[in-house]
Each structure stands twice: as structure tokens, then as C-alpha cells.
Amino acid sequence: MTLPDVKRRAPAAALVVFYLYIGFHAFSGSQGLVRWMEHADRADHLQGRVTALESRRADLQTHVDLLSAGSLDLDTLDIEARQRLYVSKPGEITIWLDP
Image (cartoon, rainbow, N blue to C red):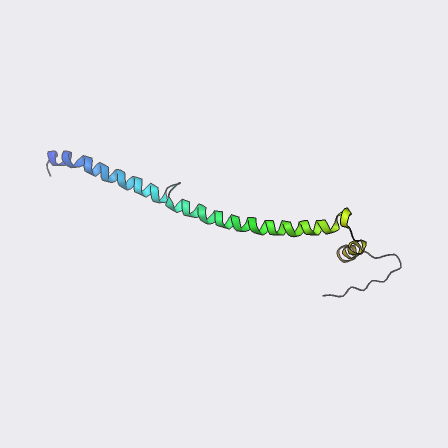
């Protein structure tokens, strides 16, 4: 190749290198297609966790409502205290059976 041929082909070669550089970073750069798919997968995973936590919160809120002062059933409170805290009245014999 002669010098005029190299000078004539240099802009095309530079353009090809530039397109390869842009294509590489569009695919695997910090904001590329691969990273975008990873973010989408993480968003799906976190949405599943949020749904599970919302369900758990609803269950706990129901339990709190049952034990609130306005709707407190003393028998329910007595059963909860005996089961969770192993409380019994003085002089009372309690026999715990494994479920």
C-alpha cells in the first residue's frame, strides 16, 4: 500500500474503530444492555421481597389488632401469655405437651 492509499482509508478505519468502541460500550458498559438486564432482574427480585414483606406486615397488623386494647379478649391474652412467656398462676401446675 502506498501512502495515498493509507491516507484515503484512514478515515474509514477510524470510523470502524469508533463504531466498534461505541458498540462494545453499548453492550457491556456501565449503562449497557447487560447491566440493564441485571438491573431488571434485581428489580424483579426486590419486588418479590416487597410483596412478601407487605404480606408479613398485614399478618402482623392483624395480630396487633387482635391484641389491641379496644378489642382485647382477656382469654386470648391469657392464652398468648401462657404459650409465649410460659406464665402460670401461683399454685397452678402446668403441663406442656410438645405439638
